Image (cartoon, rainbow, N blue to C red; front, top):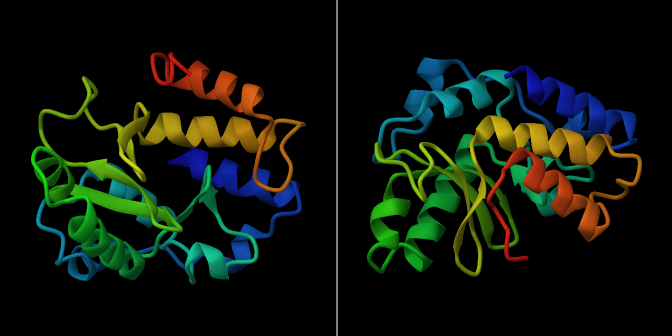
Length: 186
């Protein structure tokens, strides 16, 4: 996932010293062991993500410069486990959400919101492995992990990006460019 390194460099170029809060990469077998709590098989995208870095050392609120996918900070495996249980306790109680979320790995979080990657073989919302936002509802935010990374990279690289955000119209334009069909009614 070379886009992750480019995204890290883009944050650093903007004075966001995200490297200081990132943990070392996690080997595949170690990740399997640390994520034994997860009831489904971990997808390749999750192995790729944690083979790059092991998430953030602290929760997003506690990182001075969080490595974030939009506003959700990259979760360590320990944070992912806490997030998974919180999701199941709140959103995972009602069909059909419980089926989807039971096999969705939470890899990023912020303030009661999560980004998850579903593992269900049929995918979700017509997409094979989309990135889903779980916060005040369940919505597809990115077509895939790769389009999420490409979207975030373009956001952070944009000259108008400052302090973690872009003007809403510019953000949405880039979002739609990398993820056609998402947020068409917004």
